[in-house]
Length: 393
Image 1 (tube, one colour):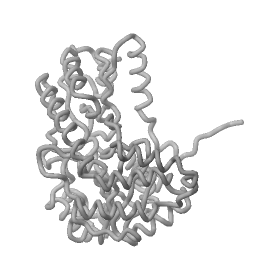
Image 2 (cartoon, helix red, strand yellow; image 1 turned 180 degrees about the horizontal axis):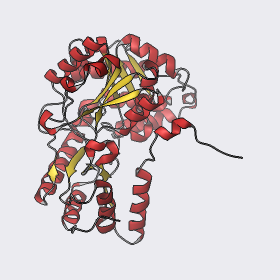
Image 3 (tube, helix red, strand yellow; image 1 turned 180 degrees about the vertical axis):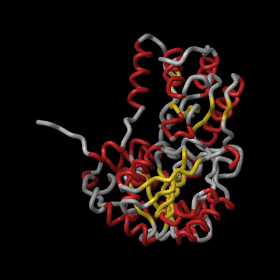
């Protein structure tokens, strides 16, 4: 039998993470202890209260039916969390929808609103799932560069009018991945004004909203006057509450948009396991306590890695939040993909090349703050010993 890939599959580049893991495994087999800073998967365990709730609910025989979406309890917990943390009022019955992790939501949302040939404004560099969703919807991405002179925020004045008039959606991510830029009231007000002018739906990815360091906490896009008229915010419990494997997130915002997404999702899935939703409620109800610990740990890690990399000649992108460091390595005659494999082979430190997030990420690498302080210090020490070599791994 002849098996052929669909034409649509040609839109999806091969993910590099499998190749990175294979290279790392080969290095580990030689006896080297790896320091893996590649995936943004939190190493801190979920809070004990959250784990106990999951365990207790999973023990009940009644917990194994379809949920068909978010529970009323979960939606109320999200609404309460937004009111406490951002002073945003949400109707739990019409302005929130549960997703099976944020990636599922990010990939499906463009399908709910975009027709083939519509433009979607996204950033360069950006999280790879955005492009996946745009391509599945057969829409066309228009990349807004994140430049240092603009504080790594998109410049709406640089978008051609003919593109803006054809745009159906805009996807933003603050604090960002891989570039940990931070939002502001002024910037979000510009987003709302631009979206209103051109009738563009805004989807703000707030997966790293609880990751902030010495400055003030990131604001919710929905706290901006007029934001709910033109957009939504997707948030996840994966990063802030260490529930990455549980796959639970939500989209909040414009009720009509949420209704359309609900219509799509009713044809795609039957909701997240109820004990996971119950555990997520406990996490959201105790968010302040749980995320204070998270920030304490990640702030220290951030300082250690940034100061360490700068001490060995790396050019680190300034950041006040997020769970990544985005940096230029000193050996710039080697491209970022070759450099990452070279670093694995010579040091056992695993990073992600910036170019997989867009061509604006060339000659950068992304490092996740997912190892304890002593290992971050050791990673810096190992990277500092890298010598210049010819390109070719």
